[in-house]
Amino acid sequence: MFTKVLVANRGEIAVRVIRACRDLGIISVAVYSEADKESLHAQIADEAYCIGPAQPQESYLNINNIIETALGCGAQAIHPGYGFLSENSEFVRACVENGLAFIGPSEQSMRLLGDKVQARALAKEAGVPLAEGSDGVVCSLEEASEWAQKIGYPVMLKASAGGGGKGIRVAERPEQLEEAYQSASGEAIANFGDGRLYIEKYIAQPRHIEVQILADQAGNTVHLYDRECSIQRRHQKLIEEAPSAFLSDGQRQKMCACAVALAQRAGYTSAGTVEFLVDDQQNFYFCEMNTRIQVEHGISEEITGLDLVAWQLRIAAGEQLDFVQKDVPM
Image (cartoon, rainbow, N blue to C red; front, side):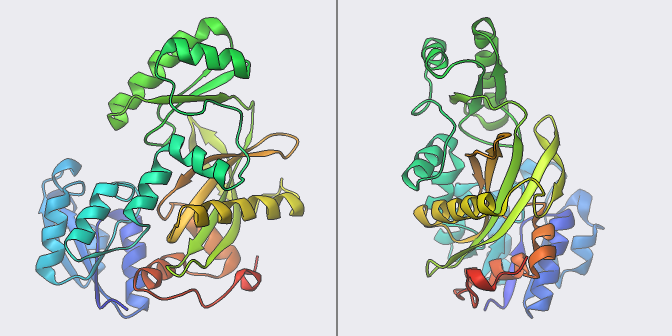
């Protein structure tokens, strides 16, 4: 097990990781911007270091400052929390190149699953259901129009990069496609620096259900059942419930098995979440995978009794899961 871990985040998730470190007897190191000197995470950690001004680009998103701080204080690993650098594969590479363990998936897995077009292709290989859509990126409005005609309206244009509900537009009719294409691409460029889009069939008023998985470096992968996050505003989740009251036991088993299959196909390690859209007939379709601990992980911990953050730390240190799927309660 690690003796010292740096937490490259702030706020609630930094506090959560620090508390998990304390429970495991690990020395915790907080980093903070000049504006966060008095923040709770900086106060309760065993050590705390300033990494730059208030602007995130100069502090919490400054890879060099975080790596230098970790090396300078003798940390062996970095936990990224969620947001900021948590799904940045360049940060994973920087950690590994400097002899630091990244508490999360590998750079390769993060790259594969972080690109939604590649993630769809991987899901298809793993036998996970997909909504009908383009085989890859649509490179022009003309190509998008061809796919929309093939799939049938309404269709959804989605950014290949990023997440958080950004770069998503719906075209219900052909005359709406151009505006949707330009708007989605522009928002994707502004938020992710990548305007690539793909297109898929729009599922009206779907349930949004996600499956929590946990995988160790030996290839052991389990799920911690599902969470329903259908109550949203602007594609942002407001309320999550675990488990979903909508799913039948049979559909829950199928969905959870698909989440595990995708994670194994990607060679995934650590905690992650596979998201699905579900229609009113309980047909489910792969949406995306979040390659990090999620804000909502706590409700999966409540229904299973498992400490996901502690297991992230243990897995990154090389420990194997000491339980199998049938041992996970709900």
